[in-house]
Image: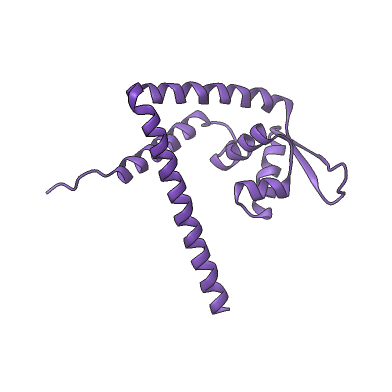
Length: 157
């Protein structure tokens, strides 16, 4: 007997397809998914401190330092002193990366339109609500699991 394909199976397939598409798009460049995520954050939020980037991306300060180091070495970002906090550094998109990110935003919008075009117009609002609800629930489940893990660590410490 064949096991029926579930919504979760399809979501996992979509996730894998997006990862393959991103890997293909950045093949031959020093850009990884994590580096692209940082560039995307800078594109949307503007210049930020490394601390703010680490917080918004949910990574450690050590991790963000490695990402910024690699992106700076590749000419994608610049670092400059914070104007009022001598301990902080501001990370910004380099001029060449700004154009790349504008192009990426354009491609992102085109892909979004193309993918939604595969869904009947009458079903799009329901699809968007459903995807939002699934994402919200998954965030809740992850947060609850992280809280349980932290509690176990505290009890065991």
